[in-house]
Amino acid sequence: MLKGKTALVTGSTSGIGLGIAKALARQGANIVMNGFGDVAGPKAEIAALGVQVTHHNADMSRPEEIEAMMAFAAAQFGRVDILVNNAGIQHVARIENFSTERWDAVIAINLSSAFHATRLALPAMLAANEGKGWGRIINVASAHGLVGSPEKSAYVAAKHGLVGLTKVTALENATSGVTCNAICPGWVLTPIVQKQLDAKVAAQGITNEAATEQLLREKEPSMQFTTPDELGELAVFFCSAAGNNVRGVAWNMDGGWVAQ
Ligand code: NAD
Image (cartoon, rainbow, N blue to C red; front, side, top):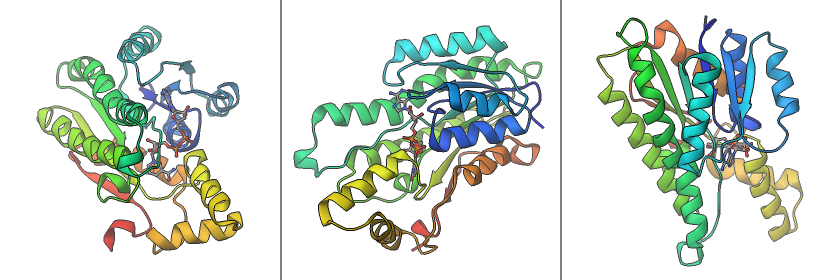
């Protein structure tokens, strides 16, 4: 379905970003990866799906590095057809104890990076398909883009902001073939969440299993994690022809979290 298209997925060396990159690659899209940590392993997993894959290590908190990454993607593949703004970090503390440096980092990586990548991707998307435009911008927000939780001020503000940016991006391009939508996962068992489980284990002296039970029971009626593969299939839907007129939604895949 996506053969000949290029997808750039930020933060795709791990977790949800890697799941989405693999789902898009299964549909034939070439992939520009981004993110830190082990690159070779995830890159090989994507290459094994028979597509071209490359990696750029832009720090998504730095606009000039995002510009270099977008130029790199255009030089490698001509243009970015599918942009998945996924890179994100978390920091947990009450507002009065929240370091200003952590606030700035969470807003930069989880929100401002999506603005920069979007503004740089749009011109080529709008020019595609003989000027009628074709493009898909998918913002990985969170259930925390729709509801709040204590001790996550920067994250909740960034994710609510990302849902707002999604709506404006969708509206500004509503008469073109460029759509923009957000995915709002509940808990997904990736390093970002394992860190929160580890903190519960340390603070309460409980097992990892007990901490997991507690985490799920607090928020998710389904008592199960959403998987990166499931989120990847939602991204594939947004990229499909059936998604042509899906514009500006914030689609939660969260085990019932925000239905309560
Ligand atoms: P993860 O920690 O597994 O992956 C985060 C990715 O972002 C990694 O590839 C990492 O290298 C990259 N990254 C971090 N800082 C970066 C930076 N400055 N520049 C470039 N890349 C950077 O986490 P995940 O759970 O897969 O999270 C992915 C996205 O999904 C995040 O935006 C997160 O907020 C969101 N999300 C996660 C959950 C969850 O339960 N795991 C739930 C809702 C939303």
